[in-house]
Image 1 (tube, rainbow, N blue to C red):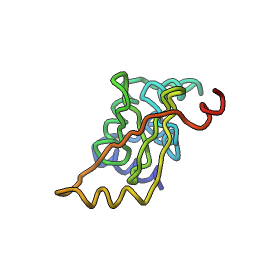
Image 2 (cartoon, rainbow, N blue to C red):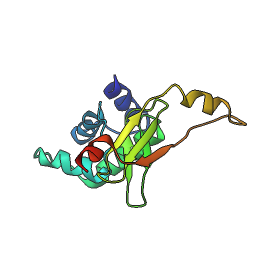
Image 3 (tube, helix red, strand yellow):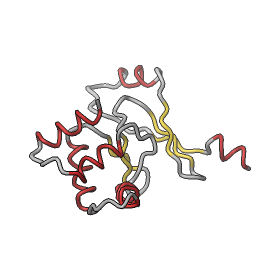
Length: 136
């Protein structure tokens, strides 16, 4: 379903559906790793596929503007991309840099208590993940 919606959004924004754009959409479909544009570019190229970084960046930008994926700013170095556009919080492990989705019914009451209409939100909780704690 994600693939169909993303492809339709690209078409609606005037993009031809090329193989590289399909690869990007397929890469994001179900991806829970919150990759950067560079990670997507590198991973697709590892599969011996010819793609430009500009294509990756422009395709991601279009998908963000069409509300098909979310752009997450975790640090000043680079944005990360999340195909899960449901209301959720992100947990950033400051040790291993992994980003984990946290789905909770407790987010909805917070959003409903805002003194106006909420158009979106970014909540990033920082700490140390269970895996890193166990390794310590």
